[in-house]
Image (cartoon, rainbow, N blue to C red; front, side, top):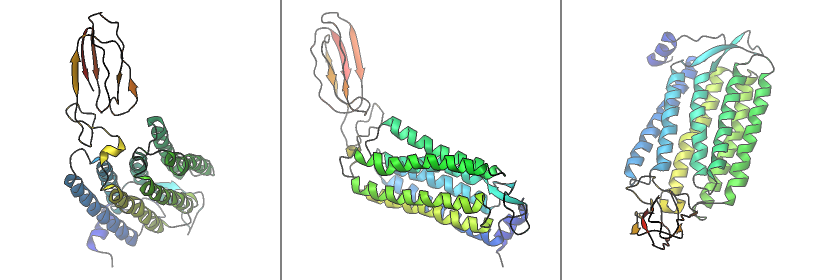
Length: 326
């Protein structure tokens, strides 16, 4: 017999499609919700145990787990679904529950899972952003395809697979070529990238047999996606965070982007003043690295201000009034 809480959730929020979850499916969803909630609290506690300025990866984990917790609470409560006429009818049913709340979850969490990995590499901002955009393409095409009754849903499925292939290329081919941590994270990254890439191979299969072909029942769908979400959420995140727990954040080249705080590894903000400037200032600016060239004509008496966070060497020829903060 289902417990009273489960009967209450399905009783107060009756299924809205011919083919819908059972009380056992709701029981499983409540179990996944409880695991997500506990892991979210553990991640939050772990975050506050970290020193300030070394919580970036842990904050991402908290966001992912909080989002997943809310999504699974909604699905366990039989909320966040809409009835859609199925392309393939099963067991004399015409409509199937499609859980749009799951895709809201993935729209937030999928790019963040990728960001968790890619921040440890030396990829440029444009490469990282394009990869995150492709993650949004995968989620949106999967949602639209699930809501389409005709065979055109498989067109969206194919488009999503194309975006997913780009993500696999970045994770397994492009990103490993360069690491911001100077190779310290290479082994940990490769393990995480292969693990996540394997799960990203299973998710399209789940979509194909559930929302796509309507072969697996909504209860079986909950079990399938629940296992995948637990593996891609708590298991992946805690494993990755364990890999980087002893690594100095300064090796990643991150800066807090806050004037009063220097590099994550403890380097402070240096100041220099002089009169005039003809030459250049070299060193990382705002944590992005490279050279910052500042030129002014000698003896002009003009004021030149350069502000940046990071460390580097500063070469100045003083002939006017200037203030430089690096």
